[in-house]
Length: 118
Image 1 (cartoon, rainbow, N blue to C red):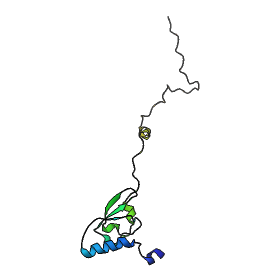
Image 2 (image 1 turned 180 degrees about the vertical axis):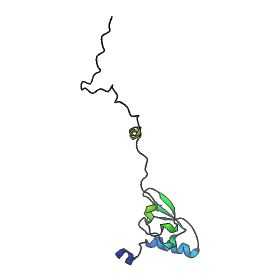
Image 3 (image 1 turned 30 degrees about the vertical axis):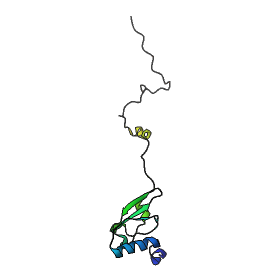
């Protein structure tokens, strides 16, 4: 594939900062807007603050993240949950005759009461 031949994409300032921190053997948080950069083995052990459009999310890079993009670990949307109106649809009612007296006829009203004998 063409992308494998070209190698992973890493923004140049990010790569310089990571190699510089590795050379000085320091671990500090590096802020970046580069969500499109691929995680490389040189980044393992560093904390990179990735911008999600609103704030920087600190991402501690582990070995399992190598090959993925930084943006995958900094979600841009927050799920607030579904509305409470949807919760009442989930309520299970016991099985039984339909409400309203159950009869088959089509009139929709109740049957007339029998006259009392005196």
